[in-house]
Length: 133
Image 1 (cartoon, rainbow, N blue to C red):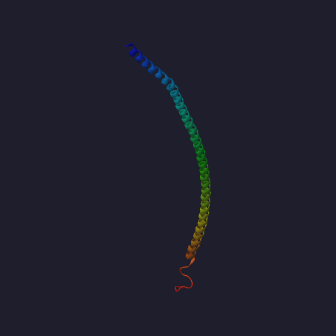
Image 2: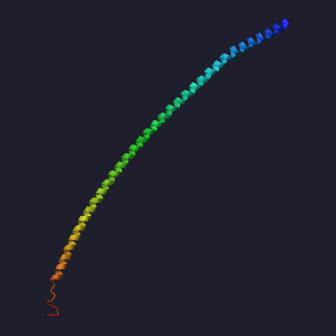
């Protein structure tokens, strides 16, 4: 029985040595894989940060372009508004001039009407050249 016990113990020792050897080989490999995974995560994080910086710069560039376009639009609006105001003032001046001319014309026509009315009253009702004379 002693031989069996020695055989079993030898077998168990062999399993223990094999397990220890495998562990000694596997643990560094697992650590290397774990380090590689960490390095990959760090690389992915750096890439994400890099992309985010690029996106942020593009957004800033677009914001600047938008501000430039808005400034140009505001300048154009102000320019158009100034031109419209100038045209409105010109039209208003023309309307005042037309109103003055119409007023002058109305005054002239009123004077003519008054003179004509005056002539109507100057015509004698019984005068020369009528049959009543």
